[in-house]
Every structure is written in C-alpha cells, then in structure tokens.
View 1 (cartoon, rainbow, N blue to C red):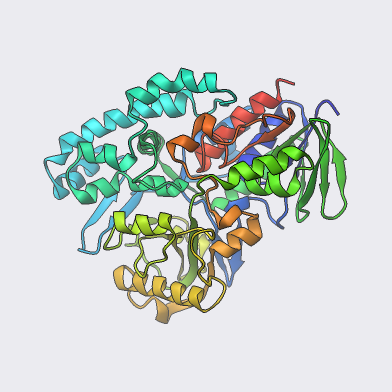
View 2 (tube, one colour):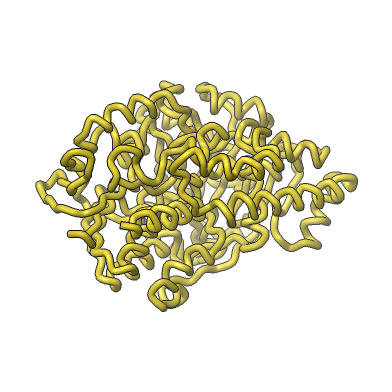
Length: 490
C-alpha cells in the first residue's frame, strides 16, 4: 500500500498526475464519474460530427511531451498535434479584422494597420510578457506553494512586474488603440479571468503562445485525452469510468482510501483530487477538515461559467479561421456584467471551427463549430438555463454568428445542442457551475490558491484548475508536476 495512489477525476490534470505517478512505479487508479475520460475535455459524436466540449486551445506541447518522455516514449506515436495559423482571428462590430499569430512580420503588419504608433509599444509589451513568463511560468509554474515563505521568495518578481496591476491595465500602458488593448488582454478569459482584474502576471500567456505556438490534436482534443489514457494504461495504470467517488475515507489526519457510488472500495497511501474543490471538500472528504475548508471556499471568488452552442452545418468554410473571437460592442461593460452577475442581451463570442484544420471532425462537405459565450456563474445569475431562456440565448448566439461570419447558418443546420452553467454543475459537480474553478485574481493565486497538498490531511493532494498555477492545459499539467513531486517524496 505504500506505493498505491488513487486519483479522483480523469481530466487533464488527473491524467497528467496519474501518468507521472505510474511512471515512477506508484500503482495508480483513476476514478472517473463520467462515462468518458477528459473532464471538461469531454466530447460528443452526433450525425457524423465530432464535438469537443473543450478546452480546444493547446499550447506549450513540451509540457505534454514530457509525460511520455518520463518512460522513454514519444507522444507523436500516440497523437498528432497540428499547428493552427492564425492563432485567432479577431473581429469587431465595425468590420475590423485582426489575425493574431507568432508570424512576426504578419503580426507587425496587423498592428501597423490598427495604429502605427503601437508597434513600438507592442515591442515593450513583448519584453514585459517574456519577463513574467520566465518568472511566473518557467520558474514557478510547477512549484507547490505550501507555505507563505515560498510566496515571500516569489515576492520580488511579483513586485518587479507589478503583479497587483491588471492585464488590461498593463497592456494599456504600452499600446493606445482600444482594439489592440483587447487583442492583447482577452487571453485571461480562456482561464476564467477578467482582463480588468486578473493579475498582470497572466500576460505570460502571450509568450507561451508566441514561443510554443497554438495546436490542435488530430481527431479533436478528445484524441489527446485518449492518447494520455493509452499511455497511462500501458504503464500499468487502471482507469475506472462511470463510477463517481462517494467518499474519501480517513483515519485520524490521514486519507486511507476511496469508496465509490457503486460500492467499490480501495485503500491507498495517497489520494489526489482532480475534481471540483468545493465538491471534494464538502461532499467527499470524511473528516472535519472538509466542512472547514468548504466554508472558506464559499467566501472566495469563483470564475464565471460558459454557455456553449455546438452545431454542425452543411458546407465548408475555408475562410473562417479555426479560432475566432467576435468582440461585441462593449468590452469593459460586458465584463462588468459577466463578473457582476448580470446576463446582458449582447455578448462577445469565441467561435471554434475545428473542421477547417481537421476535415474529419465533420462528414464530407460539412463543418463542425461551437460558439462560446462567457456568462455569470449560478451564484450570481439565476437565469433559466434549462428552459425557455436557454433556448432563446442559444438562438441569439446563432443569429449573431450568422450575421457576423456565417451567412445562411440556420438554413444549413444539420444538428445543434447547447451546454449551460447548469450542465457544468450537474456533469462536473462544479461549484456554482463555474467553468474554471477559483477566479485567478492576485489574492487567489500561488499560495493564496488551494494548496497542492492539504494543510491538515497530510496525504491528501489536489491537482487541476483550482490549484497553482490555475486553469488551461499548461496550467493543470504544471499543477500535476508540482503535485507529483510532493507525492513522490513519501
């Protein structure tokens, strides 16, 4: 039992952690509630279309390749990562379009077209982004902040890069054009953060993309999940699907094992949670620590949720980029609504078009899309997502996509469905239907975020979006590295 671990949840963080443990000789079992692995990276197949739930932006491939290298294997043998170019096509209501990529000449031409004076400002922002990337991602991205002393050591870098400022605030100090300010700050929304309040440290995302590119797994994000599962099982690991964890058992201040809803029970020397933080503490942990931690978590700020419309259509659309951001008429005002709890009539959308990169995501002569709108979580917006309001909201999103980039969309629909904050709550036990766990503000980052090892239950660990460094594939894979190092110290 001294070399046995149980990981609750088969999302990217849980899979990455389990692979690290199994590679080190720890007998590891993953317990997953849903019928497929992946967590938020779930997928559906309908009428010949493949729909990824997300995440769909893959960055920093080396952090994934390292998981295979631990056992001398090659990730390319299990999954084919395809480059996406441009990274994103940004579109504003006034008709302005901006292709965002790491093609230096092309990007500078795009900036020049918006505002020639901002080319020099962009260079200064790039220097800043590289600096926070080195400090916040390379040096600290896989470090477990278990005590305040670790935070103190990181303080000089945080001070140097003015971590108390927002991403939007820092970007605005370098460039003048409002559209470019949006282009260089929207990335925090991909990890659940408001550009107006998220720590400027998250400007490192720009350098992650610039240095490593943006990628898509052939077959969908689900193909990357399947590749990780194959690696884990080749290493001797065990994956239990469709059997939710019911209780993390304890004796004194030690976790002793896990019991599932089916009655399956196993003892282990270590237990790690990749599930929702609140659910893990409040509903699963059989120890007074659970209720105390849940009360503390209830006072924290949680990231918003998402409303996603998946749709398959007749026709092929080579002129629509793989990733598009359709900005609405408001930026700060819309963000205030989303994070303040109001569901407005207007929205900004992320449009995902995977079949332009991988035609096999749709039947021949067809295309796969989803349109995603950030929305307030269930603790702030009491909308009837399961009823008529949800249907109207989905219709409005499709109408906006049709008007902006896809004429004739609704006449060519083959299949459609939507996924709401209520679904995040039901399917993922996500507290308040949050799509990204704790909001990544400065006072909920690093040591202030959930620790990779619990402060009381000494062999209970956490991995995923709720721990340092946060959401996104590189973030949760980094958290797995930090957590694995702690677990392997035993």
